[in-house]
Length: 192
Image 1 (tube, rainbow, N blue to C red):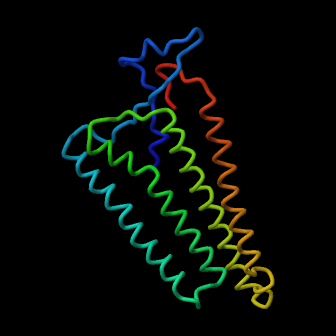
Image 2 (cartoon, rainbow, N blue to C red):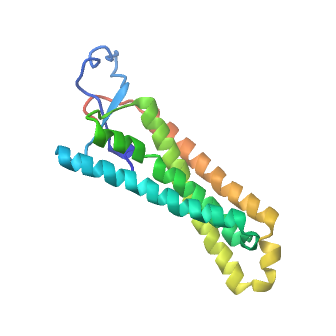
Image 3 (tube, rainbow, N blue to C red):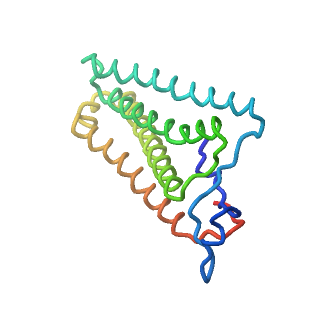
């Protein structure tokens, strides 16, 4: 669940009139939509949002530790799994801290730059994850259908280049989408 997609412009507040320009308005803050208005459920959401990244940290930390410590796991499949674990840790921890803060305190505001940073990071990490999952499918295809060529097609140098391409694709995609989204003019009453 991404909270950057649930932003709406801060339309009424103490700074709304000072943000007026001749052809529109300049939005300095967004309001995040809440999941619930009941305080008991907000606290429940806080504990749930705290448990999710802790479970992800534990699981991915075990995967990273096992791959780093055991030399038998230094194969292309586990190299890509290591990258996937790192990306998953980042993608799960990008939207959840703000969601936890919103559930714990009654402050729903997020700055425009904070919203842009969250959108950029989340898009970067998720796109790179999708690319790595595709690469892992190719890795398994080569291992099953062309086992004699596996060492030549997926050597250590090729794996590093392929993983770097996945990270670079995520970076380029997130740069383009974030720049496109936040180059738009936000008018009062419109949603992001």
